[in-house]
Image (cartoon, rainbow over all chains, first blue to last red; front, side, top):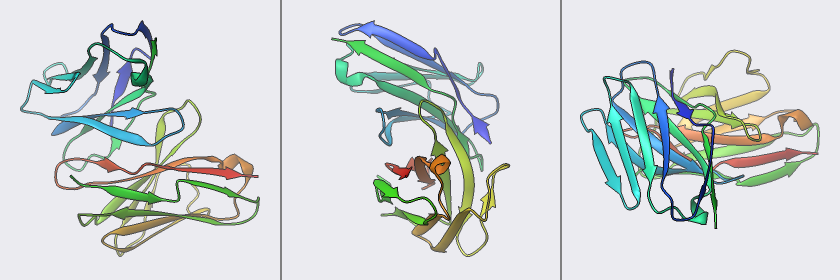
Length: 110
Length: 113
């Protein structure tokens, strides 16, 4: 299986600041997805980036992918208290089943 | 986009009873679905891979007789937690793969009392 590991494990910022979290993986991928999980809730799909893409934007989200370093980053700009959640990356390639790390727990203070 | 629907979202059951959780792919066919479990403040752990028309593949350490998986159609997989105990209380999430990646259900919070 293909596992993503998120870093840092915890991130605490003030509202309006940017939040950056990283994901590393070990084998080749076809795409990588980022998910958000609010406390006690299910996973919400945020964005998918394909292996031939280097950067992708969606609203206040910016995702980068560096396949040579086997890493991805998720940037949330102008963060809001509602962005408080855990964030997981899910690398996927071929028949690999995505497995998850512990995620990055983001707290945005109002 | 591809949607996976999971039901129920929350269930409370008595110790010793069985609980069934359903996972449906709404707008695509899923020959394979995946079941995860998540304990509080922990990662999502892959439990098993559900295969339409054949036996499920369980991850090491997961009791197949306790977590019964049935994938009888191309759009439905069920996970039955048999003889549930308080330690089975957890958050269960299913996933399926449309053509471009993996889509996850919203999860089922199981509480065994």
